[in-house]
Length: 76
Figure 1 (tube, rainbow, N blue to C red):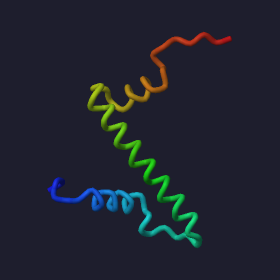
Figure 2: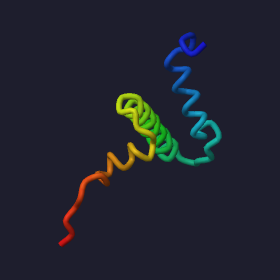
Figure 3: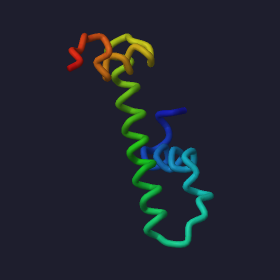
Figure 4: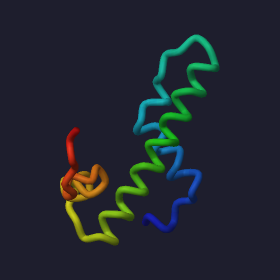
């Protein structure tokens, strides 16, 4: 079923998931800002999913890996 939908349909559903269909804004600029933030969230979701699959870590392990919590830092 997933392969039968086009990329535009999947993206529009993600926009609706982020609430752009019911956003109450007066100016188009605010709507474009919401759309831009939603697009960034979609890219982050895809990046996190790809990293989780490639590294085999869970979300907490990936976050610690990104933040570099596994390394020791010298405090001055």
